[in-house]
Structure formats: C-alpha cells, structure tokens
Image (cartoon, rainbow, N blue to C red; front, top):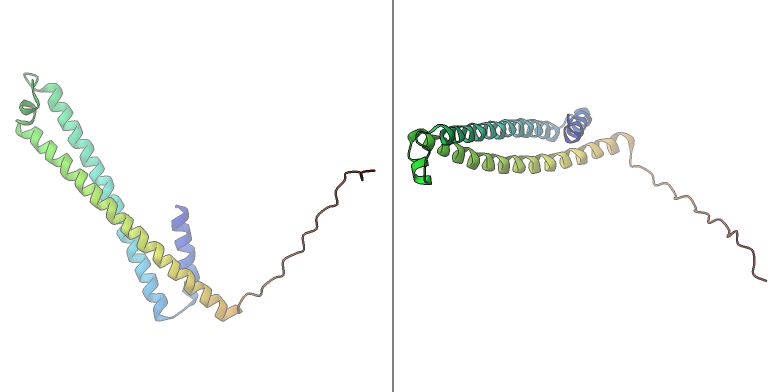
Length: 150
C-alpha cells in the first residue's frame, strides 16, 4: 500500500465519525475514484502487454520471413506483420490515453482528499474545540567564549 493510499484510508476512517450527507457523498466519491484509478492502471498494464506482444510478433516476422526482406515495404506486406503493427500502434495510443485518464483521476482524488481533510478538521473542531496557540519558547543565545580584547 502506497503512502497516498494509506493517507486516503486514514482520512476515510476519520470522517466516519461524521454522519452528514456531505460525508456520505465524499466517501462514495473517493471509493468510486479509487476503483476508476485501479481499473485504468490495469488497462495500462494490459496495453503494455499488448505492445510487447506486437513487438515480439514483428521481431519474429523479421527473423523468420523467407526470404529476408530487402526493404521496409516487403516487411510490412505480409498480413500478419500488418496485424502486429496495428495492434502495437493502437495499444500505444490507448496506453497514452489511459495514462492521461489516470492522471485526471489522481488529480480528482487529490482534490477529494483535501475536502476530506477539511471535513475531518471541521469535525475535530466541533467535538474538541479550536486548537489553542502555544507561545513560542524564547531562544537564548550563548555568550561568546572569546576572551576580551585588552
């Protein structure tokens, strides 16, 4: 569990003491965003695997084609190589799109965690009261240990 996930779990635990509609909406929103982020992360991993499969297929075709291709046109001509190229290109585009979507979900989750912090702070202030300010301790500067000049 990452620090971000631990922080989110702690904040969700803190706001459980509040029974307002706002808390329920916030909790549902955070849960949904976490599920969406996890789903996007799995999709990115799947796209990376498909890219690896496409690269392996293209490499296989390059090594084992009879006769060895003399130009790029001869290499792309076979249907199976085209399929691997399309699979790799589409997977790369999807992986970039899913990565961007994951960043959007992470930003939204960060915003919801800030709302959660505000709600937890408000809840603590209503139950315990506002924190008092403590005076800062005085800082003493030690005297210089150099001998006086005569």
